[in-house]
Length: 117
Image 1 (tube, rainbow, N blue to C red):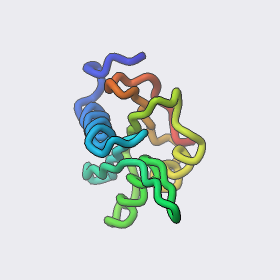
Image 2: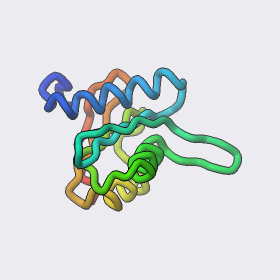
Image 3: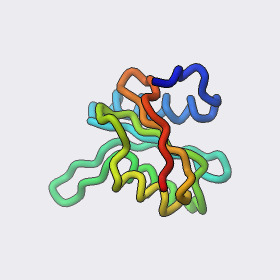
Image 4: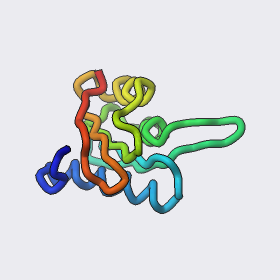
């Protein structure tokens, strides 16, 4: 476990945003990404009959749709122990293999930091 108070303030911000998206929408996951200019994009799980996206995939898609060229970091708040391969691939596609992905539990405690690669 990582003490969330020890995180860089910008990383703590995306974890907090991801946590609030999850809680506000009552969904399994919330996510946030930060682009190369410092803008943040926040999303929740999308689960429709015709479309299913994880929160992190949705956040990356929102960043791309808004013109982001790269990512500095990503965060997902989830019950899962780690970010899925599909989530890491979405982050890698925009941010590159070294982009950090913070994985936090529902209480906001960061359990792991992995790279997108």
